[in-house]
Image (cartoon, helix red, strand yellow):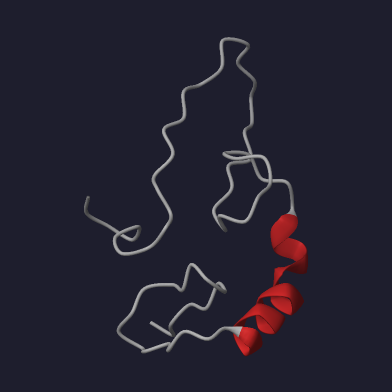
Length: 77
């Protein structure tokens, strides 16, 4: 597998347009939704949740790594 999911626990999600088509779909890009592939607005409360998870994460976060699937840490690219 190639791309941003390599070396993380995240997997690409195949999505097929439902039979009952609608005009607009809110597809989650933060990967924290509880109802994939759709956005449930979880991202609005992520800053405080992720900050707390990062502070308690035992993994080493090197700048060349991809995001940490343990706590949500993302390098500054």
